[in-house]
Each structure stands twice: as C-alpha cells, then as structure tokens.
Image 1 (cartoon, rainbow, N blue to C red):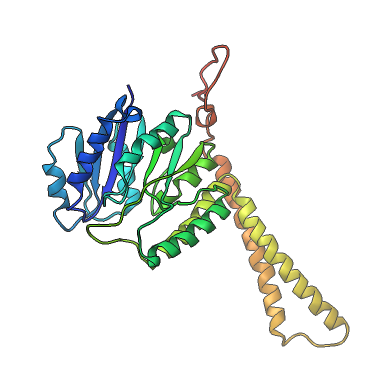
Image 2: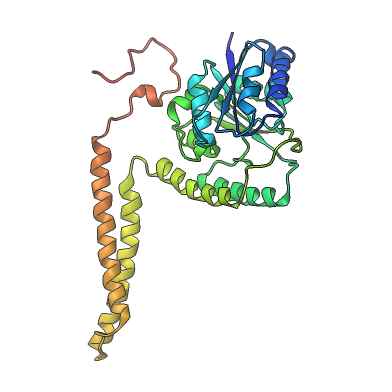
Length: 321
C-alpha cells in the first residue's frame, strides 16, 4: 500500500490549518482513488508571526506533523524541507489557505496512477483580484512559450508528484513554480488537470508585483539550467559570437569609410565596434572555460536517466567504482 505525503507550506495561516488537516483526512477515508493509500500530512511553518505553529501543534490527528523553519526562507525551501521529512512514494503539495480544495486530491492521484510523474493543477476559474490574476496569466503564457511545457498554471501550488522527481530536481530560491518545466527537461511525464479554486476567506495574499519580477528572473535561471546545463559553451559562445559579429560589421563599415577618405578616429562608433569584438571574445573564452569545468564534473550514471527496463535481467546500471 502506497503512502501519500501531503506537504503544506504555511505562513500566517492560523485560521485554516486545523480545518485543512481535517478535510484531507476525510478525503483519504472516502473516495476510492485515495482509500487504498496511507496518508501523512506535513505542515511546514515558513516563519509565521501569528499562532500558526501553535495551531499545528494542537492538531490531534496522528497522521499530522509539522516543521517550523527558523525564519521565512521562502516557499521553495519550505517545500524542500517538507519533502525531505516525508516518507511517501507520492507527494501532494498544496497551499494552506483553503483556496485549494482537498476533494481534488483523488483526481490528482488518479493521474499519477495512470503513469504521469507530475500532475499540475490548473485554476481555470480563479477567485482572486485582477491585480493577481492578470500578472499570473502573463507569467504563465511567457513561461509556457519559453520552457516548451504547455500547461496553463505554473503558479498553482496544488500538484502531485512521484517521489523520484524530487530526487532529480533541486529546489532553491523561487524555483518551486518551475518544477513541471524542470521535470519535463529531465524526461519526466507532466500533465495538467483543472482543479476547483475557492475564494480566500482568511488572511491575505502574499502575491505582489515583486513576485512577478522575481518569477521572470527565475525563468532565466530555469532556461540556463535546463537548456545549457551540459553545454554552457553554447550559451556564452553564442552570445560572444553575436557580439563579435556585430562589432566586425561596425568595423568593416568604418574601414570602408576610411578607405574612401573619411577620417574615423573621432567616431564613437569606432569605440563601440572595438568594444563589441573584445567583449565577444571574452564571452567565447568564458564559454570554453565553462565547458572545461563541465567536462570534469561527475557524469550521470545510467540510473539517472533510465526510467525502466524490460526483457532479460540486466546487470547493475551504476557506474563502476
């Protein structure tokens, strides 16, 4: 019988944690998709300044446990801490404000049972102000286009995972919203289902314009570590080549002018052309150094990239000592 770990990062949610825990317990006592599984619920208090931690400690149910972080480290760190403390083969993550509906958990688990590694919730009908929904739609549109993972709601914290996804994906900063993109880049199967979204009844949203800006900056990080993780020379070399070509075109234009008798020594364009060539060469050399560093790091073993085997018994896939 599989164990499902429900990891709930919370900050200043004193009015909701007890109700949420009770509703999750009821879900696993009911629908067939969840009835055949054990459950543990882990609340991660990410630096709350209200009575959230005391409310978690007061929950009497034996399947509920809690972690209290020393300060507010951010949602990604809270999720990572909760996952590390969990024991389930399947991980469910959800927010602690009761906007995510626990009754949707069996549908998420059904997709995991169908063979998917990541099931992302899609809050198609949202009960949030426009100041939150419009920036979110812009972020999701850009992220889907850039990452190539065509889901509608990267920001939705209501997701289900096979545990081995977290063995491969390292969470830090604000990368929690990009787990589907990171997992897809490593070959895991990702899907999306619509989930019910409730209006916020307690507390206040932690979303702001600063989060949107950070999200786009983190998207650059995701592009770097997924697309150029094993070939940094393509990233830096490509930028260097583009700058170098631009500089050479400028210098060629100035050379033609000079040959026609027009002095170029005082032209700012000359300095720009020379600068672009120099910076371009620096980028190329930096890319070469990065390739040398990557070539010396430990190579992934077959266990890191093989999903399953079939047929005759194969020898151990791990690299020799």
